[in-house]
Length: 68
Length: 181
Image (cartoon, rainbow over all chains, first blue to last red):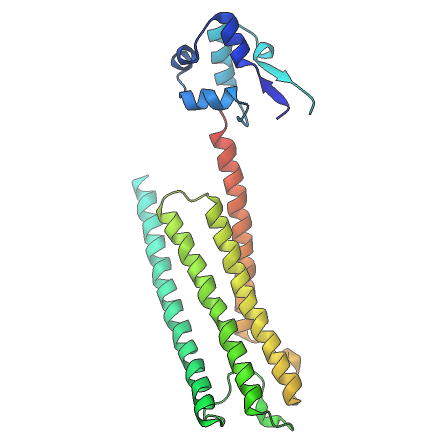
């Protein structure tokens, strides 16, 4: 997938655990894992909004385009 | 949701009934073919009942040997087995539907295999009939071999391929939905 999700990087910068983020977002750990490992096919704007609000960042901080 | 489940169960039960009728009907035909073949082998002479090819052998100038009849009969019986294979694959799909996980790869594969089986039966019988026609050198035309049975099984076969494609598309959409966070 050309879109890379840098969630681990932002979580480390914010010193937040995945478990904490899961509770804030209200998604399952499995879904968060799908997002972190790059297996996700799409992300809803509502989810992206919730992540940016929780991690106090911009969508560009989490999503990166890498040409394949 | 409960109504949808009830309707799906009714549909599965209806299909199972049609499947049983199909198996019984095909079974009766197969038993007729087997009985004809066993009589041929036992008496080494043509049975009273006519041979099951669509070719009209009455107009034949050439006498077909008993061995040739036996070969054609065995070929017919083998090709007829494809109907059972196709029906078995369709029955497999209803069992998979009953598990309530409709969009799975096994369903698409089962429909594809059913389609191949029905087409194998349709074209197999046509090829055998053409071979009988060529052997018997009768005044029949090839176009007379295009029976309703042949057309129905060809349509059924291609319909199964179409359903396999639809389910494959459904699986892709389901996966995309599941992997949308």
